Image 1 (cartoon, rainbow over the protein chains, first blue to last red):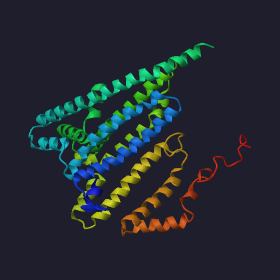
Image 2: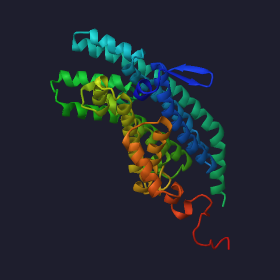
Image 3: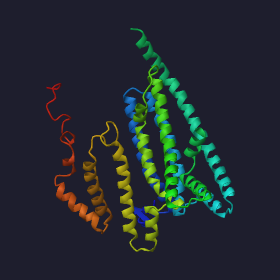
Image 4: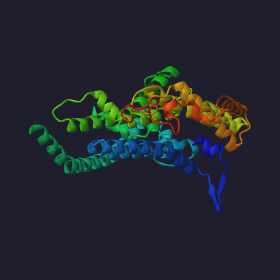
Length: 152
Length: 220
C-alpha cells in the first residue's frame, strides 16, 4: 500500500487508459494480491480433496471464502494510514475527541458489537447453507459406504 | 470461549490494537516491551481465532467422513493447512499495525525517515523487499520438508538462492532501479546460475525429466 502510494507515479497509463493512483486504488490493489493468493491456494486444496473423493472437505472452500471476505473487510482499516476514510478511520477520529478512558472503551465496545453481529450473522447463515448442502450430497454417499462395509 | 472468538474474528485489527493500547495505558504500563507483548497477543488472537476455526471445521468434516473412528488433531491441521499458511502470512503482514500502540517497528520508523528524505523510492522498495522476504521466510520455515505442505521437499537455502536473485534482478530490470543490491544480485545470478534456475532443482524435478531417476521397475 505504501509502495503503491509513494513509489508508483500518480497517473499510470496502460495503452489508452489513464489510471490515477488514488489511496483507494492502492488499498484495493494491495488487498487484491493477498486475496488472489489466498483463494488460489484454497481452490487448489479444494480440488485436491474433491479428486481424492472427499466432497465434504472440498466444501470447506466456501467457509474459506467467507473468512477471506472477513479478512479483506477488516484489513481495509489499514487504509486509514494513507488517508482512506472508512468505518475504522471514523471510529479512530471519534475516539480522539473523547476525553475519558471510559467513554473511549464504551465507543470501542459498541463498534466491536456492531461488527461482531454483522459478521457472525453472515458466517452462520453461510455455514447453515453449507451444512444443508453436505446433508444433501454427502449423506447418501456415506450411507452407501457404511452399507458396503457392513455387508461382507 | 465463543465470547472471545467472535469479536476477535469480526473486529478490525487496528481497532483491537487501539483497544489494547487504551487498556495498557489505563493499567499504567507504558514501556515498549509491554506494548510489544500486547501487540503480539492481539495479532496472535486475531489470526489464531481464524486459523483455529479453520482447523475446527476440518476436524468436523473428518469426524463426518471417518464416522466411528476418532480422527487425530494433526489430520485436521493437515487438512486446514492452506488456511493455516494464509493466516501466518496475514499475521506477518499485519505486524506494522503494532506501531499504532507505540511499538518500535520498521515500517513506521522508515515512514518517518522517508518523510524528510529524498530517497523515497529506495526506502519503500527496500521495505517491499524486506516484507516479501519476511513473508517468504515465514511460509518456508514451518513448512519446509513437510510432505503435502507448500514448499515441501525444497531445502530453504536452495529455495532462497533461487528466489532472491530472480526477484531482485526482476526489480532492477523492470523498474530500472539504480541501486546497488539489484545489480549485485543480477551479477550473482548470472555467475552462479549460468544455465538458468532449473539447474538448481533436484534432478528428477527438472523440466522434461521423468519422475524417477532410476528406470522404473513397473514400467520396464
